[in-house]
Image (cartoon, rainbow, N blue to C red; front, top):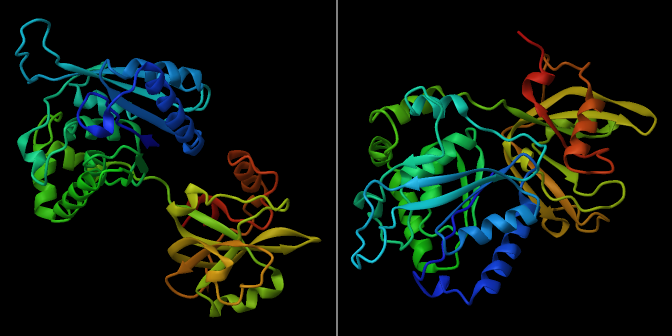
Length: 378
């Protein structure tokens, strides 16, 4: 999932507009780049006022996003209208869209219904504007309340999901993500706001402060509902990396705790590091040769870290024809696991993996599946 909040409304030099063409070109440019990185099942959230949100809506449709909802966030405590010449501005619009028309997205319908008194949640959210306690580390002119971000994150992501905000500001998205047991990557061009972001992150690393924040977030029936839900929230299935080695090299695995995979396919196409690998907990080895069918072995290991490295950074591979490798470090050396189901359908996973990443071939490359698929039931 990619989560974005963006607002143009004369809040600083960083958001000054140069006219409609400038706004449209800018939005088209960053939305195009975001779409390239967004997973097919991912969704995007964009917040704004009338100054920018209609441009966003138009370009999302130009780029073949499917708009799912346009949320109206009604602030029940908006700042007053001192001019008394028009209605008080008390709402912002939030567009929720998915990347592809026919690829399903994740929506936590049951939780949203529960938070709304066991009635379907509507697209008008009555939540307060940002509270003073949310600015403890500094102020950002367009900072959003944790209540809005927390609802968005719980509605459209699962635990441990990655959330990207390329207009991070003071990283309210990241604070909400971390409090909700999600992972976060924020990008911003203003050093001042990045310093606030870091201070806020350090603040919630204190368990007492994090617990206090969870109790203060609006939008729940009581102070404990958010934390109670996180304790019982269904966890995603554990993922496993399947990696290839030649049959003749299997005997050396028990002496190894680091494993490398070529990051090119048979056509020498460069492969970006698949997102799914970062969620994996175990590495299980499959084997075979040019004339022998692939088969799962009983060798596996618990993953400590995963990285993408150039050959110049890997001892012994400096002169390799392959420029880049996937490096998987294990917590210990490989060991044999008697419960691995060696009759599992490896070719089926290969096919599904290649289709998901639009690869011509995934022979001898890591494949991701679920732990329960390759281990026999107790």
